[in-house]
Image (cartoon, rainbow, N blue to C red):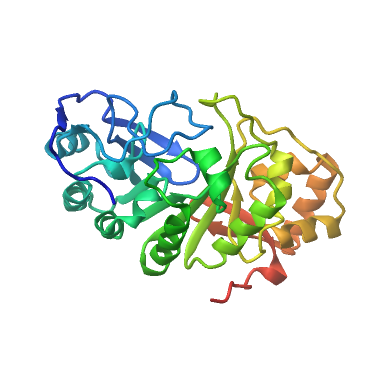
Length: 326
């Protein structure tokens, strides 16, 4: 249970760095960020891959920013060009003790702008946090592992966190949430990229409802600990291990190495049948001649576009209407 006691909590007067952006996010559009822990890292995880320096886990924030301060700063930057107001933090945003109050205040001024939170999912076990997140338009939940040992190795959670309880709440939340739900899995070499763990992730994802997209990624920035990510090719291979009904998206491309292989028409159609891809994905996989064949398949309408969120995927025409049955 999240400790929301405000005893010994320091009210941060820091205004700089609360609002950042807007950033043109490929996945979420024009995003205006709110950092709910601008002073320093406050997190219930100490992930191996974190871009922030290692830090002891906490189960509550002790340095907080007033809701009034956040709203005042938000009003200075919010305009009609912003697609999403993104709640994040140097750490875990759901540790912010006045999250429910803040979401209500943002909802009063956001107009048509969407609200989004980027969370590690752990605090869904807190009923107050769970109910607060239901008020948002978009929620992105991280879920790196299902096995207890691998979860503890990768995410290095606070001692109070139980992965089985978190997974159960993620499943429950997916059934109740009415907005756009995104799942993110970040792969670390030699840990959650193993076939058995991918199978457990797949089985769990199949229990979720109304997923907008599942983003697969790996380490893109210098990590907190001496671990390494996996290549784009390995991510693509892992993506094919997930059920074809799942809306899988390979999100990590910063250090992606092109595969640029020969694909026949049948290969192209089979590949997109197994896993719809964006043009960025396709450009990494296909050689020049294969790209020409792809364009002909598009022209002949054997391959069509499917828009998911802000991304355009390519999929065989005969599978366009295929939908996952719940």
